[in-house]
Image (cartoon, rainbow, N blue to C red):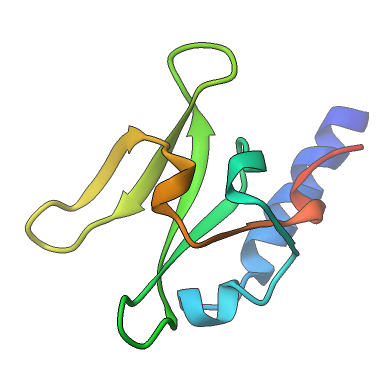
Length: 101
């Protein structure tokens, strides 16, 4: 029962996230990109305006302690999964409602 409740809470939280990376970066709490882990949202900023313009989600990697990123890269590439390099991202957010304590 506890696991089922956690899944319901997680599903509810996903639907509560606003549309657009510029709005999503305001949700949850900020963490260092080096501390991002499975389920955290990570963001890139435009190099000139420094405004958030891209979001991805951290997913499990091929080895314990290693993570990947799933991101939409546009019509040419579609949705892709690749390695997570914290230095490539400007900020990270942890949405606590997605995690069962």
